[in-house]
Length: 138
Image (cartoon, rainbow, N blue to C red):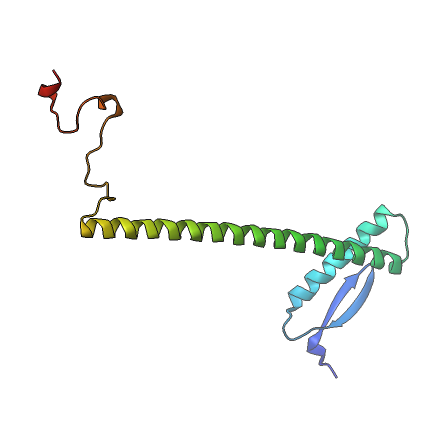
C-alpha cells in the first residue's frame, strides 16, 4: 500500500485527484503534468462548447498525443539533419587532414607537391619568366 507522502493532490477539470507519485517523479513534475492536462481539457471544453468531462478528457488526450507525435517527428528530423551534417563535417575534416599529411610527407621527401616554398606569381606578369628581375623586363 502506498504511503501518504507518495500522494500528490491535483485539480483537473474542477475535480481533485490524489495521484500516487512514482519515486523517480517529483511532486512539481506531477503537478506540471496535471496542470497541462487541465489546461488542455478546459481549452477543448471552451472550443467545443459544454462537453462532459469524459469527452473533454478524450479530446485533450488525442490532442496531446498528436502534439507528441509531431514533436517526435521534428526531433527525428533534427537528429537526422545533425547526423548528416556531422558525417559530412567528419569526411571533410578527414580529407583535410589526409591532404595535410600528404603535403607534409612531400616536404619531408623533397617531392614536388608542397607549394608553400614556391613564390606566388602575379598572373599579370605571366609573360615574364619566373627568374627574371625588374631590370630584365625593362
